[in-house]
Each structure stands twice: as structure tokens, then as C-alpha cells.
Image (cartoon, rainbow, N blue to C red; front, top):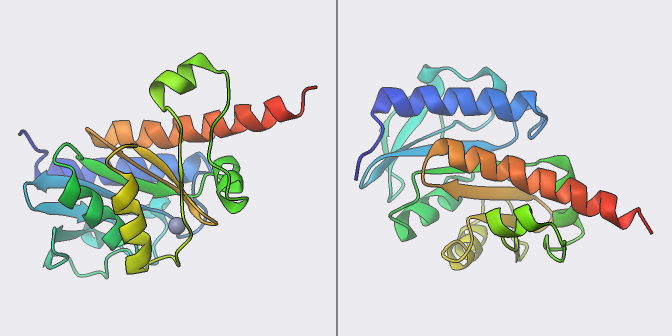
Length: 193
Ligand SMILES: [Zn+2]
């Protein structure tokens, strides 16, 4: 398996953070991003920092057991959600969690994204299931994500937001964008009768 170098992973995380922030997928300090760099290590964003204003000194390197290997900041409080995906899926190279408004509205109503006759969304995403509610940052939430991530690359977290993983970090970002786009179309379609 070919992995990104530490430098490449950090650069990509910073770039993805800017795009999430500039596109309104996160507000203030919301969301978290990680990227794998070996069979047992990843870089992840810190807690309490806007993803639009990251620099390399803020990022944290962790192993899959949650030990910190490098970095001075506290890792994202959702790091267990990221770790469980990497622990289970060798092909997961990156994980992105955000609160895109329209998809998160579905998550708040505890409705999966399903039932739209939109060919492209069906092919690219399939159904985006709802992961049962558990408090943000809890082990329970990570366990729920662990149960669902084998069959789906995009998940709605009940009353919370969206988490996606990909074969590379751009694919994980594009999944978040596609989920939000799909959610918007689904919402608009309910307004037409
Ligand atoms: Zn969140």
C-alpha cells in the first residue's frame, strides 16, 4: 500500500480544512479531518481550532490505538470515530467529519438520505444510513460508526452531522460534498408537488 508522506498528509489536511470552511460545511471550530500515513498511523486535526485556519504545527500524529506520536495540540474529541474506521478498513486512507447544513438537518430529524430517484446519487453514494444517536466524542458513537462503516462510505450521525471515508482524502471530501448536494436536492424535491 502506497501512503502519503507526513508532509503530504499534513498539506492535504490543511487544504481540505480550508475547503470545508469556505464552503460552509463547518462553522467556527466544527468538524475534523484525518489522513493515514502508514499501516498504523494517521494525522488528525486538533480540538478547538477552526478548520479554515489550520497550520502544520497544530496537527497531531496518532497510532491506531490512540497514542500520540507527534504534535503539541490535543487531538479532536472525535478521534475515536476516525480510529475505528482505520482499525476496520485497510482501504480507508482518510476520514472527514463535518456539519453541512442540509444533510445535518436530515440527521437532526433522524432521517436517512434515501428514496430519491436521482441516478447519480444512487450510483455514487447509495443510501446514506443514519447512525443511532450517541453523544459527540463518546465511545458509544465510535462503536455505532464501527458497525456501519464496513457497508457505507458516508454516514449521517443522528442529531449531529456527517462522516465520510475514502480511498484518498479528496474522495472523502467529495463524499461530504456529494452528501450535502444530495440532501439539498432531496429537500427541494419535497417542495415540488
Ligand atoms: Zn461534529
